Image (cartoon, rainbow, N blue to C red; front, side, top):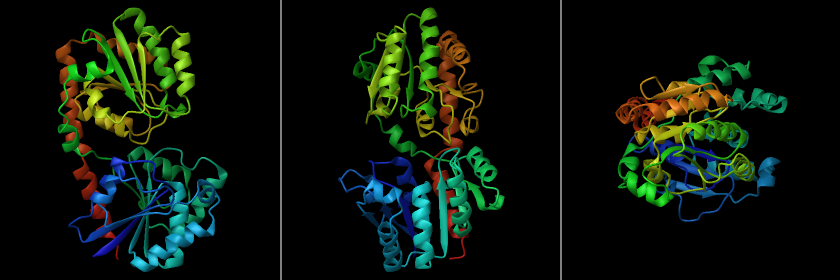
Length: 371
């Protein structure tokens, strides 16, 4: 059996996408060890049921940021003691630490997983990548858009070194949810007669919720029974709430904060909206489509690779007017038409964005390495 060490910056709670990356290996001739550079075991991390071993280094965020030798040495010791064959790094900080440790430990293969756009956004990051990526065998991008972004912003990288492995969902998890539209509406405190637009994501500038609130302020003038549900927390939490209040939307906008029951409350939405200004490949979008929701989303990053005309509408990013028109178009579409869109969205996920497809591609990538 060959051993793969996944290196992740920090443990912040159960992360389904990482779980799927690790689940790719059972029965394939490989098995996984997972190393979090910071964080502590809390008994809630499902990845522990998939990986052969999970380590939590409990380093401080400051020491990680400064790339102290202690965290690199800890990774080096794991690689040496476990005789690791492949190091799979997730995101930039883990890539720097994991690649250095792998070079010191003599690990033959290093993979890097890039989950978003504009990850080479500073001169420091560019020159760090210029050095580090020489030691990396493959760079995994979660969409073709991310792949092209990596190639364009790192001119020293041979294009063939970057491969696309799209994010995928475990549809069995979504299908196991025994929760109706009425149940979700009741939990959210929303009457059946309301038309609900919903979004899920971190409340941050890149997710574009400010443009969604502006658009909704126009929609509500023509659709008085409309409601907007914003699920998530983040640095713009207070600002967005204040904006909604200033626009007179407090009675028709619900900020739920962070929720663990996202799959359940999605059942109460009529349309899912993703107003991002940058996006690698959104898990929230995939989950909404797998839940048979018609979607409206910005035409940025990997989003156009997910949505086609049969299952939703694409609009320019940062254009609240265009977004408002698309939202009203969905309201005026007959219910049967929205249902057809939702069904088409689900079929698209089944065809291109399942965990099984992602797992197979990751396993094939590991097997292609001359370990």
